[in-house]
Length: 400
Image (cartoon, rainbow, N blue to C red):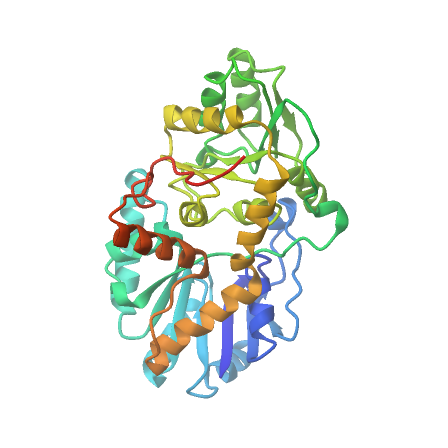
């Protein structure tokens, strides 16, 4: 079976599982360009795709030859609108009865723009209903979005972005150093949808506790966030750090006690993967696609987006526990094997087996343990303290 991925750039957040697929299957990655200027500024680099064939900016004849390949080929689109190739692939697949799947984040549902966006998605889904065989949607956020937009539930499968496991000694998480001060980290852009102002307000409510926060990144709202921190009396505890190259940022991440991602909307949030793969627990919001990893692992807390009070309570809980221990890091590192490229590639193939060969419906690897735990609780007549992995603050079963 040949797999053809149609991307706008060579994504480092899909490379690990695509490289694994290329070890056993014929894989072609078609991209408009290697990397965008904007992503390069954010520290993204061109990934290693292993044995996959890479086709950059194909002309019309090359594109047609890829589309006219075997009827067993599966074409994977980066959304309906996220990739310039999507329309051509869908149109050809409709004429020639080709196999097509879509890998996509949810839309941002906030405000009037969100309402208009949902209408566009509904139109796209309606127009491609008989052509797109399945949707790999980013987390529970994505699966719910596509259901609401009219996609058939049986054709939607939870998915996620994948990052590389740390391979350098300086990136590996060792035993945390003994200290009394709790270290928090935000790593991302200073833009409206990242919710940094919500984080600052929540931290102001934790003033009596012993902590330090590093906010790493750049963006148009950074000056406003600096002013907010000063107004809240946090200047000596919240440290603003310029955006760093990826290795330096990951080294800083490996030394923190808790990553916080207070997004008002994030289609996924790959920094969550990066934290878990370094043994770091995470607080993120329910408006973050990667909250799926936290809900089903219990290795952090999920709070409602925009809720200063929920975020303050979760921060208080984690800071009160004290700095991260080696036992906690080891627990997180062991669990994070299920979000490595090999695990996600195996799940990806099981989705194809279900869709095209009638195999059993697969469970995303990061959800398997949680589903087993829920089944055991049901058999024993128990209820999960976090309302069966709902959107409220959730951190069951974590030892210090």
